Image (cartoon, rainbow, N blue to C red; front, side, top):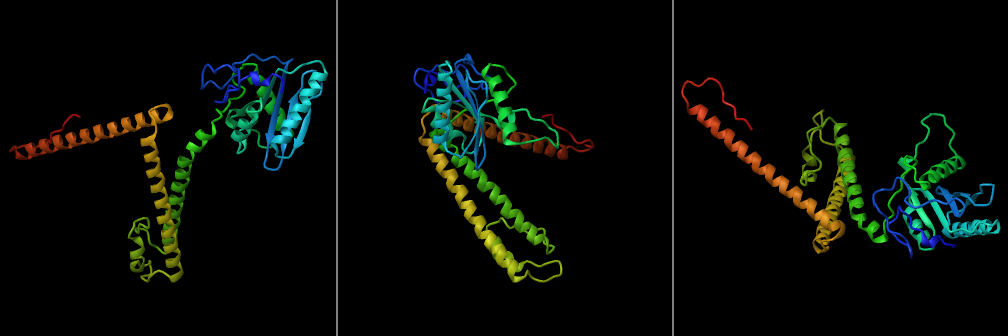
Length: 322
């Protein structure tokens, strides 16, 4: 599509043919490429689950087109091509097509798909866009699209403070994050199950029982309520099902951690794997130093205490400066 393939999206880690490398990987608060409004087709997309509202600034065309589409990447590409043809007919050949939208569940795969077809795609960090804090402010897809267009044009001009972009990961980088995301979800599920069991026991006046222990199912029959009776049958069955669910979640967490450790051992000492290994070494080293320091401090305090007790006539307890 025109000369769009010659421009690199500064917010992505994917390059098109002939693109210039990004000078600063983390500098996503402004565009590093010169912006020519006469030869640049600017497009923003306000995404939702049911529809995409596409707004554009077409060189040579006074109106700012606005089109509502089904969530279909092919239809979006056809619309962009139609706007490019309109600009060419108006005597403005398009050398760059810049498209942006806020981060959502369709962000990364769509950006990779567009970049592979010569579109400069950017993903806007949602928290970087300044919005009105009024309680009764108007909020529609049309207003959101206009706001995105304003901040994206400011970003293209190289001005800071309008918005920030999200680095677009490759499919391999995105897949590498899944174990950590899954583990975090399972840890939250584990806490939710434990809290639900504690709340169920608290309704009967039982507060000292720890349902997360591995031998907790065997001790359910020995529990006594505040009235001195055993737990009802239905609550016991519910707790047993929750404990079985908790055991499954624990097993899945252990499996993820074990697999992650094995992959880390097989990974090369380059890229993010090298940083993870370095951080793990630093953490282990700091833990060992902390243990050694605590051990020495405790031994020193114990020796001073013993000498103070062995000294006759001692009144003031000695202290040891650490």
